[in-house]
Image 1 (cartoon, one colour):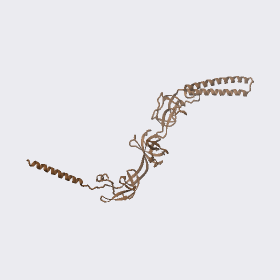
Image 2 (cartoon, rainbow, N blue to C red):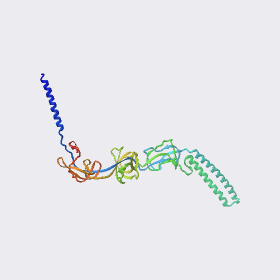
Image 3 (cartoon, rainbow, N blue to C red):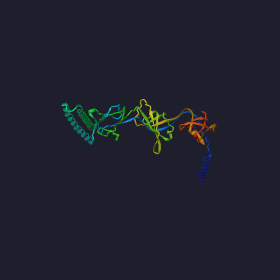
Image 4 (tube, rainbow, N blue to C red):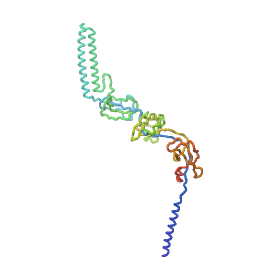
Length: 368
């Protein structure tokens, strides 16, 4: 027993030593590299650039108040269709005290002048009847009376406008009744009943009562990087992908490219606009974010390969083709349009040519 144990230990050590030597030998034997290959294919190549932006109405109109006052009643709400002339809101006028006082003073002064002109006309008419004065003399006082009467009417109308926002004498009530100026849909009503509003004038844009737009005439408004804008032309077709409409792709036509760029986060961007073709059953809401794929160029059903198969020397492309099993030779080729993944082959390759995948091995062969 004492002899068996040392013998087993010696055998174990020898076995471990031999196994280690065999393992190291196997590791030192390099496996031959087997390069994967790929053949050309017929494909459609589309070169695109992407513009990010949103879908907006071509014309969005802000309806303003023409008088200063308080919203008495709103007649519309967002999403409601509306036609030109429809009533949007009633505004109760809150007159400025200075203007009201001045208008009232002008009425009183005009009334005094009118009454004086009336007395003078009556007195001179009496003299005319007694043949004391001529008809021409009477006509002067008749004209003066009519002018003072007109001034009084104008002062009264002005006082009514200051106090009520309209003159009943001429039947104008539009200033206190805000009406739509276009056909379309109400997009937003930013005020509430009881809110104060400011009139629109030469010095102030005024308070917006409602925003109205034609939702059947939508455009894509986006930005394109300066590196791509030189490739764009008006009339190019675009595909618009809207995040809120998962599976819908809208068609459009590029119709405007800004002549001047703007800087955004250190990058020069150019504004682009594209008309959107209406799609049956798809309602487009204003403000949807979207990406537009603008087709710069395309080739249909051409011979193409993956760009990863290309190699370059002095800026000229070439490939390695298989002339015998795992034997390759260099071949110069002419290439055409590329979409960044697939590239068009103009010459130098046939459809059944086997092309070496650079830096590939047998593990990639299945994928190739």
